Length: 404
Image 1: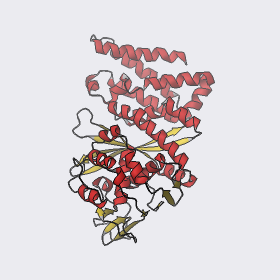
Image 2: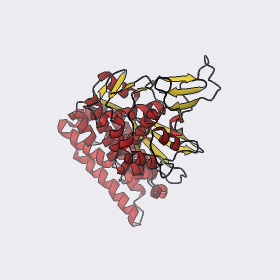
Image 3: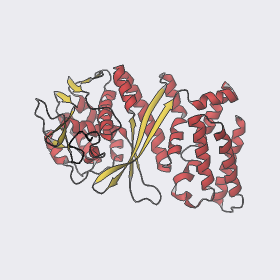
Image 4: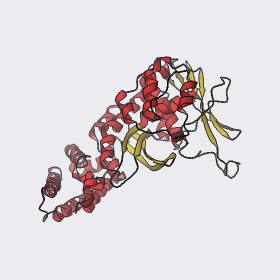
């Protein structure tokens, strides 16, 4: 068995997220063989071989993140004792290479995630008796510039600290990137690619470790993957509006059904947007996403419309914020730049967000009001596309009568 010491702080840093995401991914593909404890994980000897072998080739091809000039992926490959090299200096090429070479990936004896600073270097899994190769961490893992090691008591406040990994931590971080990656998007007028990652919140990770139940971690990982692939990937191609993203996730009826089936009261996630900046990457958005089996909206709808009206109302709202709908497309889509009703459509989304997140009934009233204004704005428009949008907004207004 490979014993992994869980001593890296579980916090909001990207580094912590990626390391624990990678470990949870390994556990999720072998829940019956992995042992999850509060301070230690036990993995079978073939854990890394099986993890890379199980990577989905289609998902690998979607991860078009480029390593920076300082990332020595050839040195990492040599440290694993593998021959050959990745075709290009991208996460896609490296993951593809490791999947092909999975059966030759060696098994470590132990992994110690305790972060230590020695001789101006932050080291993870290097200062132990196993004498592992000392590798510079990928630039993506240094995105926060070594957060957590600067204070007025330390001498590191004004110093640059290099981040070093063992080959095993390198592999874990790669699996974390693979597991959490959602999509790449470039929005209208933008000149940068945006990369989105969906991760468990620190509180959720602590909860999973405290339960010491690998099968529970497996179940939550599957729910998160459903959200990433079936909800967020499509939504993020249409909008970068934070409220619209939160709406689409919280109103997805399939996800709510899964939460109820597994008796999960609440699931806390973090959506992180990263963009390249020079020779490195920068976090541009950090969006908390909380899914509740019994949301404030559900209780509100039940009180107003009765139990029979709740499902109708939820289905209507989920349809209204479908990522392909004009309502969400108005917030960010390139084609919406010159839509005259755009401001009203965006305000309608914001009103729905207030209704869903806070259970504020005035949000439903304002939503209807802004839809009406959008219809009014398009009354004199003579082109076919404007007429289609006007008809859609009118349809949403009419359908409200089915549950109101």
